[in-house]
Amino acid sequence: MQNKNQIYFNKYDITIVDAKPEQEEIYRNLVNLQFHDLSEFRDSFDILEDGRFEWTFPDCFKANNEHHHPLLILYKDRIVGFLIFSVFNGKHPEVDFQLVEMFVLKMYRKNGIGKKVIEIIFDNYKGKYHLDVSKKNIPAVKFWEKLIEKHSNQILKNPFKDEGNKYINYIFVI
Image 1 (tube, rainbow, N blue to C red):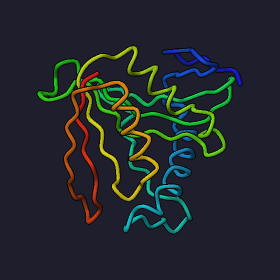
Image 2 (cartoon, rainbow, N blue to C red; image 1 turned 90 degrees about the vertical axis):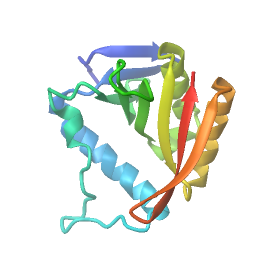
Image 3 (cartoon, rainbow, N blue to C red; image 1 turned 90 degrees about the horizontal axis):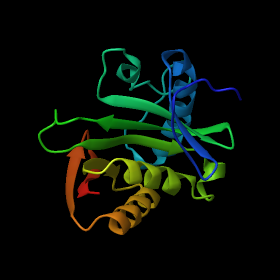
């Protein structure tokens, strides 16, 4: 696949690129796959009449959105997932970065691609992070806790509820 996007990082055959507004449909398709996977962990995750999940990240592609960065994850030049990463540049009083969403296609998860993507992010963005994970999503909780504990010795975990769903809020320093 020819990709003319800005390359942020290229390591371990993994390329992380910015998603352009004209790639919003690709992002929407990946988000639908992610929402399908997450539907087993949420009490309220219904599909729309057209059979798709509701698109909840359109502001990522607005030109004036200076915080949320939609990124595509490529493995050996094939799109395998996405990451929504927020950089606050001192404009958020409590954190520097937020890992908003991450998704890797199931067939690539056992390759360690998600772990490598986050390690690339951690290696290049030092500071205080924010992350929320559904308590019901045990694989994600284990994934994030293992990675965070490996890279940080300053971790706060706070449970909270949103729309009846229980989450863990992680604040940590890399």
